Amino acid sequence: MGASARLALERSFSSARKKDLRSAHLLLGVLQAQIGTVPRALALAGVDQAGLADRVRQTLNSQDQ
Image 1: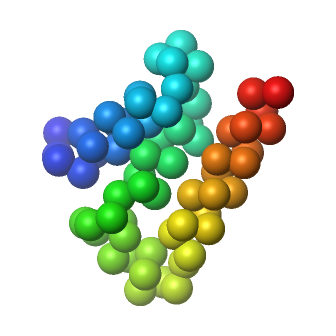
Image 2: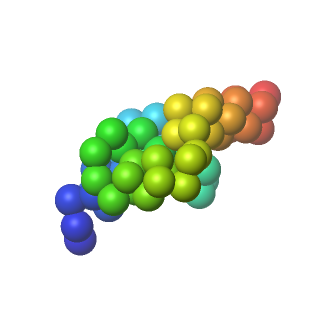
């Protein structure tokens, strides 16, 4: 497994209990990367990475309620 994938998994595991993990947690882990292929690709596409991560957090919070 590559370093980026391992870090994304570690970030997603730290944000929720293992039994509560959903695909959005993994997406959030990927979006939290500050260096690497994903942040470069998102920047080239003009995507607001921080804004997208905030929307994912809001979605997760609303689903937990």
